[in-house]
Image (tube, rainbow, N blue to C red; front, side, top):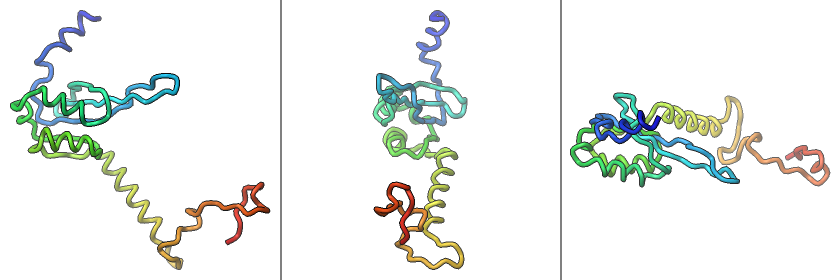
Length: 158
């Protein structure tokens, strides 16, 4: 197995010259007694659909180092950068690929839109309901049991 994997991994031409680069984190494994999460970042040639490399960590430090090793001519060839909406990866592309067009992946865009829509729905009362916009809805209020009902877990009247 080592004889087949070594030439491909060590071949400097395996990376090629991509025009679209993707960056995303993955939970690599859980280690130790407390199953601490160990993350890795995947660097992908988006056009070819090929994994270029995996770097340790979830921050932007290792991806920046990896991109810096490629050289200015290689970086100048990249026109698009795909990422989730994380700040560290946006900073990587802002720093290392300032001329590349950044594209957020659809999953994270829809997830963000849904969470903002849910926030808005919780603030707007249903038709016919009167309510102070600053007061939370009853389902959002924490349960505060009174002394007589504390053992039953029931809510006290307000």
